[in-house]
Image (spheres, rainbow, N blue to C red):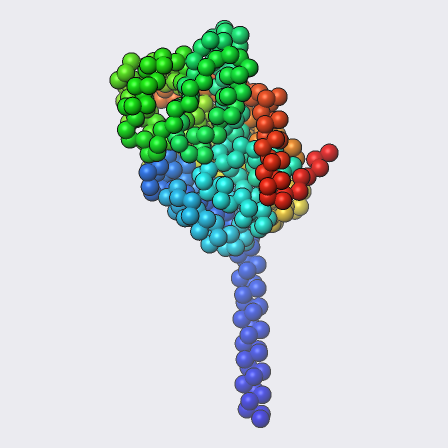
Length: 441
């Protein structure tokens, strides 16, 4: 009996010791804020995905190496490869959501993955940052209060594009009788701006032609033959991956003016124009941030990341549109955690509720963008309970054959037009899915 009791007590003692060891390990691990990073370094869209992933990784490395983390809390970044496939994205989310200190925010980097994760993230209390992609109506915070589209949406981007076209035409009244073609990747992404374009066409009297292009879009001759026959005044191009340079080359071969073509933000990266060669000169696109690398943050990256041999990828991607997009994404996430710490405790790991609180009032002024070394690169944002895109600023850029150049300053979207559309769509989504509508007043 005594021997049995000793063995039992020994087992209990060992268990207690192991339990305490595990507790101490968990506490030590909890000093790092965990950030899962869903990436697509492989697959048909990898040329853009690699740059985004590198930008995210290098910015997190900068925060850890230059600042020692956020008020001493280092960030643990873990990548998971999705190949831009929805099922793999969901698998990554489920596998990583409870790792480390626990995921509090996830960036899906795919409209399809974003749609699939919205109900899961709501159940888990995890914030989704769908940076200018996914459901545009997520900008309406009273319904999708755990999803943020900072700094904009395809809809607000479209209003900036239309304002530019109207300015070039000499005013909105001069659009009457003109023709605009929307050539789009035949997916949820490409179809996103169609309701808005139809609304503009009805109000201002121009003809809208909708031309779907089946992905991946390696053969588009028949579509562009139709577009040449239409002779549009402007073309909205929502391409992705190989579709965009193929569209530009094919349009050029048929004598279509590329200066009259304006791409979406994902038709305005390096991989959108470089494969098209000289055919891409003059082509334009919407962007949610500044192009190039002439920003203070790059000096810090050079000193603390590149020169230290800690860069995630090749230096030829630094300053590209995709890389800058990754920097922007990581900076928003870091600033949200920083502002959460100001409210709930500096030097502490933020949980899901605290992280979501910060995103619901994320404010980055123009002065703060300068402090971050991102003035001109990052648009100021002001997120509220009602506005989850934070303002929707965007600009128009143009490819000169070697680099992108900003044609405009950051422009305000037509909020009077998009906000009622956000609300109507979001409230229909709420009704279909039994989601209570938050009272932001």
